[in-house]
Length: 230
Length: 231
Length: 51
Image 1 (cartoon, chains in turn green, blue, cyan):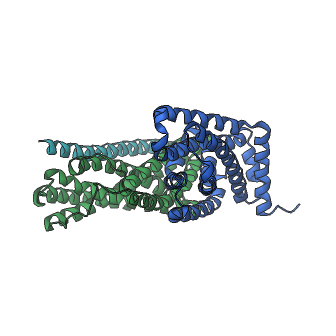
Image 2: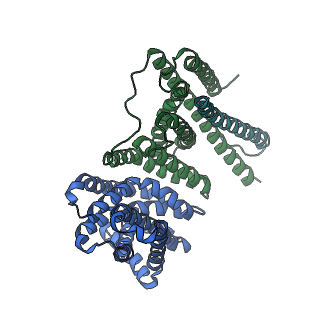
Image 3: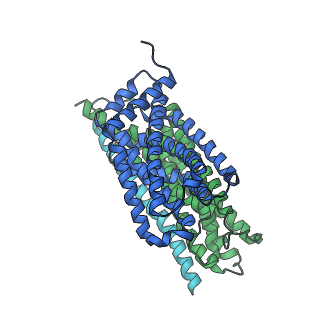
């Protein structure tokens, strides 16, 4: 008899797979090719959801970190570490797909515009948090330090965005992400389904990673008990 | 003995740190020397004399603040390593004072040391990069002070975090600099305004933002310092 | 075609990243589960915490 958590995880996996398949079909078969950029534009259906979910992960990181600092319940820390790791992964993918879209679209790999810069800073902060966990002397210290950093990082991100936005306002923007044309109906559907697919994927990965964290905790506790009872 | 109040505890800690620094001078000398070296490297990087004159306004603020950023990190690292080396931090944390006072005291000390560094660094920069700062000393000082407050607060916060990690010092730059992005963007921008002789009032929104951030950083640090100092 | 090359690398990167992470997670989970089973088999004889 499978435990309810396993069952939920299984359902989530199935849902993710199904939605992702639907998204892929919509993206590559149904959605029309964009007139100007052609096939390359389709990376947009990956890049935008990945970026949106990355910022969602900052919220879940904040929830986990603040919750842990407040209650010291392990479940919050599991959420925090899972959000930080999966968020960092998604952030990496955003930073990889972005330039791949930017080069054919705007002619440059990178520009120090607010969204891109903030994403890069977020990537650095998340990497720092993950490294701190690795360098901690005990898991408890790692959880505590990472939670403090998680709160600071989450609070910092909107500030960074605003600051870069103001800063860029001082310089004329020669090129960059301007207002995108209104999406054709086929495109909108593909984007929304893709968004849902990545959201489910994020939930799945966070759940799995949190599960791993919980199992590792259990393992550590058992090892400790075994050592002590010897 | 009644536990000291917040302000007196903070000042006592600040005074202790500064007295140690005054006696050994290890942090100030190391950071000053480091700052000078970085300045020289930048001069080479930007072609020496070519970095002066017209290009000065574009380059000097950035050079100044990058130099400060890295020198500050040298300072923050040593500030907490001092304590870690003989578990003094544990003793401080156990003292019957609000741990927030520990943060406040150390942040004040760090601010004073950073200010001292800047007072030494700015004339050096003026000489090496031929930038006239005497006529703009007042606005420049204001810009520096406001931004250094924020840097001291963030640096003390992150310094305490990495002090308890193995090989933590390597992480300080990685953590502090991205988090301080708004601070540096504003610092470079306002410093450019000041150096080029334009009125600071034009940058009112930046200065207000940083003043607000300074308050925010201090509040957040006070809130979180208990959790940081637990071991 | 140049544009298709970009596209290919983009997708490849996304799928590679996600797949690598999923595989790594799966392996870690399996390893931990195996160790847990082994320990719990032995742990039953000694003291076992109520989880």
